[in-house]
Image (cartoon, rainbow, N blue to C red; front, side, top):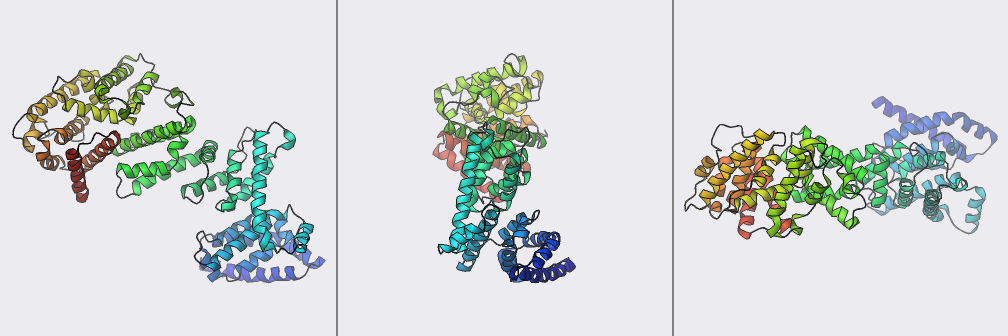
Length: 558
């Protein structure tokens, strides 16, 4: 590594002397010498770029104080610009000198100088010597007109691309595929320059008529990276075009979202909602093709984690953000529901898409029963066109998990006989793989627990231990079993809603949270409950205060 650094420094001095000689004389001999060395000089430029891209602007000038002079001399040499990939590599090197956030006037001047040189490179093959003589004759120095020239060139190319997109059938006015590919390649190192945004957008939106993608993969990758790191801001239409045209970019955007969610220390649902909205994925998912890819990646995450509650909660928040974006984009669906959920019953999808806050509270029970009937027919009778089996219906249902949580609350707040439809809905939500017989046993178990809880709610004295015993949580059953998770949810709902539940809430949580896994589960439940109450506007001051206090206490323990 040290030897490579020494070799590069020696090469640097050699080429600096060469460029000075070539710059001072324009004889036939110097031109011939230039042409002889073009291949070697390009290889030197490539090595320089590999070194420069690992440093910031200040470090570059500390190690190579005259780097700006070397690059300037190279950029004003027409032989170098015309040779192979030298022009592109010079652009890459120049972009390494740019300060993304200049801190002083020197850095700002450097940025302006780099912008001017980039303008010269881009115009070198389009504007001849007479143009330079003309502008100099008018009294303009290159530093005065190059920034404006870059801006005008970008706007001109963007306009040409838009015309190409709109008049693609007119072959005389179309850019050739080779020109488009070359233009996308040249843009790669320029993508983060603000003046280049219109050109990047135009390239993404402009669709060719060739059977295969003609823009360079590195262009898509660079644009996607800049979007994810918030270095550029493009209209949503351009982002959608990017993710439709380059699947790896969409997949990387999803992985980037997953990484942010995993690396964040405290992931309350409000924070998750901010991450999701900031990713632009819900807005882009209004296009069914993007929605299907996002949907598939969520499915994979769900299966890989064996239905982890955190993943389910994230999917539910994403779905809510997606529905809000869909409504904002167009009050009427541009695409049929079948395009988003092709393997589920349209009538089931339609009723689940209803936001609970848009349904009068007096009709919640009726709506829940209707959801249960449709799901049961889709899962057990297969009469509503569901082709994906129970898991397909379950995956649709968990997207709208607010309805499932409302089931528990409805059952605990009613003194009437628990409706079988609601018991079935809970059993299916927590254990979709069960057969009819096993699900029926879970329903019997849940019904018995509900009976005990309702009886205890009328008791004048409540104790956490009695509550735990009544719910069967003091036995040696596997706490990770779906039925046990369901019963824990019922207990937690009970202490939040029952008149005497508040007095024993902390004791109940202490008894239940005997492992780190269950503690995280309870934290997730409380966070999810508060998030849903806030959205639906159904939080009671006392229950809300208790839930927040419990959540704060549990978070300090983990």
